[in-house]
Length: 555
Image 1 (tube, rainbow, N blue to C red):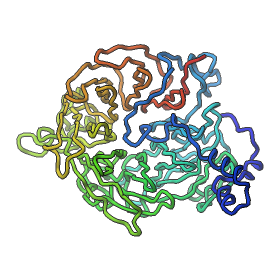
Image 2 (image 1 turned 180 degrees about the horizontal axis):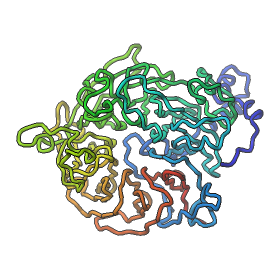
Image 3 (image 1 turned 60 degrees about the vertical axis):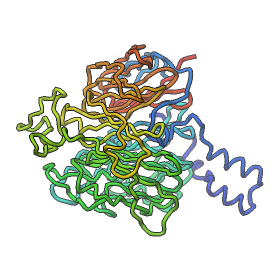
Image 4 (image 1 turned 180 degrees about the vertical axis):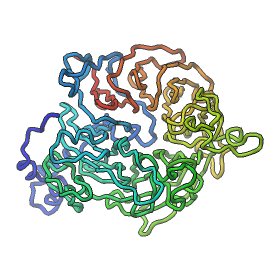
């Protein structure tokens, strides 16, 4: 990882835009100079990709042009640390990650943000690895590391916990809003960070970054200009009694001054009961302070099958702004967005709900089907891992809003194996229980999936865990084609510049969109990919378990 050019001392003396704005308002900075600098400091490009899905509706479609239809990701350096760019094609830069990366990168204001695990802590003598998470911030043009945040492993303070997979790394895709970036950490905290890190000093009010990164029982880390600057943190475990299962994974939604966050509240180690059924599965926070503003009031935690992992989306339906959430109980919910910041916490109002599991997925011979029966790892499970098993599933994917409709599919933890899924197209303008009245169409010839759907030019593209890419008519659900990629697929697809970009655990694909299946290129991956490609400012960003590539057409 390369260093930034400026020294730590000089960087700490830089004036923050907030302080500059305050000085301008006091009249101590010349007006033309002050406003020019302030506006420049907070300007982001219209072609940035600042959040999960790129925008609030989470539909991964871009108007970018001039993107490559083929590329070569190159070979590892002889030292084994990174990619030799001389062996690549159409790659601007590449950065080494840790050993795990499950969230998607985001890009805003000249910076690239991506979550990984803490294997990179081996390269920093100040840090101690603890099988937990890191957030990295790179320079968009060069790929140089600007700053990093280490989140040490957290001990679960409750019995029978399965909060053991913090080594999956930071699964939350960072959400950038002006000079702030928001993530859910591996320790199940909502963090607000300064996009510039410590390069301009520790802005506060949180000032214990050194202690935070060192972890409990260790002396504080001495901060440098390449460390993160935490503004505030909200601990979902300590504040709300959340009991995360496996990993904390939500990518937050920002709307006005409000953050919407899934809590990752889940089952105990035995997968038999909820560790805390009274903890909320979905909340809203004040983005400025981290104060709790609202909670769901449908007791979602008490009904869910496994864990609340879905990330929210947002859309305007008529005169109402709705926040959509895939529930851990297999139900898709639409909540009314807060129209103001309440003084005290309130309940989020449900506009509608839609059960994505039909009766045939929930009952067998008139008896309820146990969710855990579909786990292929259980010796007693009838699941043959061939995609034919029928049973209930939760929703891990994000509901995608498009043309007053929601597109969302059911799935389970991929470790549970294959099984029948269900892709639903829902009328977002209905109210109440819309399981019957809001159904536009459904598609059951899909395996369980945790991928988001992508809708472009009247077509829906969505892969399932088995690695099959499905293309359907967006209005009718009629199948156009299905492509068998032959390898497990977790992420979704990016549609841009007349191309479809996606990846499985073995290859990256570039396909032509349309009602006939056509492969433009396929690229072998040096390490498995579990995320969705994104595009920002003429560059595609593809993340694998160990590397991040900035892919652009060579001039």
